Length: 553
Picture 1 (cartoon, rainbow, N blue to C red):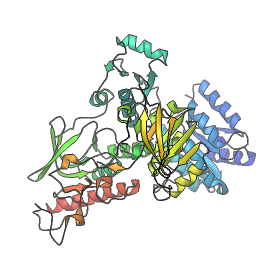
Picture 2: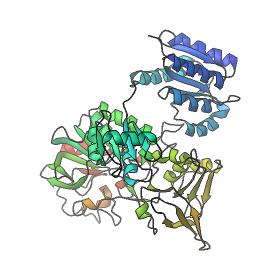
Picture 3: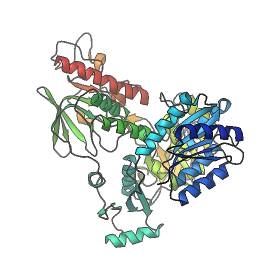
C-alpha cells in the first residue's frame, strides 16, 4: 500500500528544500514527502495524489507566496483532502496578518520560520497532527440525506440539529435539486410533509422529531443506569468542562443535553480569545475536542433529553425529563447556559426559521452567497457571525442599537470587522418590523437618533440580542434573581442568614445553590462572566466542590 504524503509548499527554494529535508529525516520511512515551490504546483500535486487513489496526511504551506497565498492554497486543497492536517508557515513579521487570515480556513497550527531546532519546534507539532490524522475515520461516509424546502422552519431545524451534533449529511432542496424529487419518489413521499430524512441504511423518516433523529444516527438518548455520582445538566462549555473533570477524577458522570453539546459557543465560527489557541478555534472544533475528551473519561452523554424538574430526595438529587422518566445522583451541576432573546418586532415571529434565525446558524452560510445578510447585536457572538457570513454574503449589515461597538465587543473583533470591506456597521439602529409570505422579504430599520424609518429588501436576519436563562422549571426549587439567573454561594447569605430551608451547619459553597449538593456553573449563574474560558473554569471548579460535598455528606 502506498505511503500517505506530507506536502510542503514554499516559494523560497532554500526554505522549501530545508523543510523537505527535515521532514524526510523524521518521517521518510512512513510518509512520502512531496515538495512544491508555488501554490499552483502544489495544487497540481494534490490532485495527482488524489487521482492515484493515495492520501495526504498533512499540508504545510508558506503564508506569503506570489500568485497564490498559503491560505488560498489550503482553502482549495481542503476540497480535495478535507481531513488532511493543515499548517501555515509564517515569518515573525507576518504573524498578525496570518492569524487574521486564519478565519478563512480551519487551521490546525502555524509555525514560525525558522523552526530550528526541528526536534523542538517542528516534530512535536507534526507528531500530534499525524497521530490525530492516523486515527481518523477516512473511509467514505454513507451520509444521511435531508430533503426539505429552503424556507421550511423544520427543515432548517433538522439541518441545524445534525450539523451541531457533527452528523455528516447531504442537503437536497426541493425545487432546486433534481435529486430531491428522486429521493422523495423512492421514499414514497409526495413532498407535502417536510423534511424527509433518508438514513444511511436507506430508511425514510418523514418530519422526524429530534429524538427519532438522535436514535437513528447513533446518538445516545437513554442512560446506562439509574444512579450516578454526578449529573451535569447542559452541554455548553461549562457543562463539558464539568463532565471532563468529573470523569477524569473518577466520578460516574452523565451529561444531559437538550439539543447538542457546545451550547451557543458551539455555533461560533471563530473564538480567538480562548487561552491556548492563538490562531483561534471554531466552536465546532472546540466542542468536538471536549466531547472526545469526555468520552475518553467514560462520561455518558445523553442528547435530546430535556430536564423539566429537579427534586432533592433524601441524599439523592433527582432530575425529571419531559417524558416523565427520572435520573438520580449524589450531586447535580446545572450548566444550562442561556438562550438568545426573541426580537419582538411585528412580522418576525411567524418567519422564525424561514429567514429569521437566532444565533449563528452556520449551516445557512453557503445559502447566503451573493445576497445581503442582516445581523442584530453588538457583542462578540454577533461580531464572530459577521466575520463568518462576510465570506459568503455580498454584504453583511451589523445592526447595533448602541452608538458604538466599544462597550460590548472585544477590540480584536472590532478591528477585524473594520478591515472587511463588505461588512457595514449601522449604530443607533433597530429592526422594528419584517414582512414576507413564505420567507422573510423586507425589514424596517429605525434610526434612533432621527426616528427615521427605512425599509430594505432582506431574506436573511440573524439575531444576537442578549440572553435569558430559561430557568422557569426551577421555580420553587432553587433561589434565583429577578431575571431568573441561579443564585449561589455568598449571594445566598444575607445578613449572616443562610437561605430558607438550608439544613447544613455551614454556608453554601461558592458555586452551590440553595439546595445542598446542587451546583451551578457558567452563564446561568447570577453575575457570571459571559466568556467561554470562565464557563470552563467554573465547570472544573464545581467538580472540586462536588468532591468536597461528597467527602462531608
